[in-house]
Length: 73
Image 1 (spheres, rainbow, N blue to C red):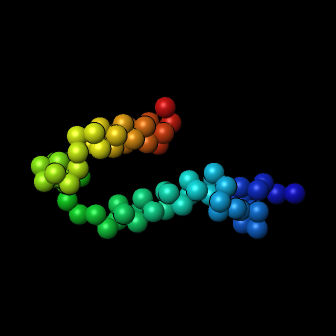
Image 2 (cartoon, one colour):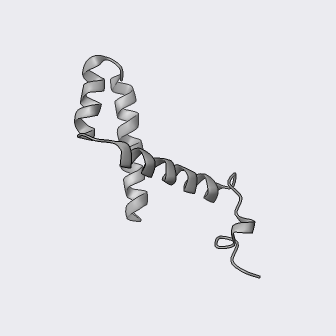
């Protein structure tokens, strides 16, 4: 019997692994379509009032956690 992670027939999109793959795929699509400076874009959202300081703090914590995850720390 093969490894279920590599066997497409056993791949389940609703599993935690499937959700992670979906999230990474969506991020790659976003990244490929994004032009500009991400920090400036976030600053523009803050300045315009479209993002609150609390939302910024949450986004910052999430981004830091995601970066540590990708770096394997």
